[in-house]
Length: 228
Ligand SMILES: [Zn+2]
Image (cartoon, rainbow, N blue to C red; front, side, top):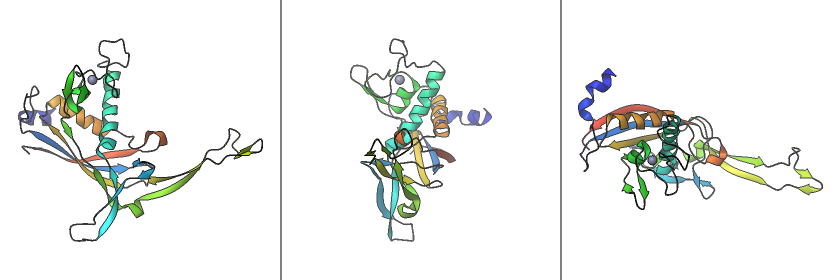
């Protein structure tokens, strides 16, 4: 804890009512370990961007939109909160909190730090800022299209004279594609700082959930405490 002791003055002991001009930036590289899928409407999200500082030609890059980054991190944190009985998935429990829908408790670390919006309990804006992340490498060299068969239970594509035609083609991000990212926590408390950092280190599954393949690892390269 000695490092945290030296950083004590950077943290609030309670959340200030108004923004205080204290920020923590987590400078990261998100690194794919398997085949994530970041898509809307069936195609991978891409955007033309300038290739580099000196190289002005435009290349297509993969995009991880903001929600595709923060949702898995929130879910990792919420899993921890439930495992410590700080929140509950039981609708009748006093500490019930639901991620989606309007049953956010408004009191747990997830609600307080990442924000919530519920009619009668009011709302809280997220203290965690993130934005779209773009692949370092070009789309053309960072993805591959796979074709999937959906066979009958016997493992064949035809049964009782009927052919299965459910063959799906899906673009996947390749392993070892990097997405440089900065995520920011404003008005940090020491506990909130540890909670957000823990979520970054523990979140593993990014991208479309139904693909069950989307392992990524977050490497924290630097942490900046500053006033802007
Ligand atoms: Zn909550």
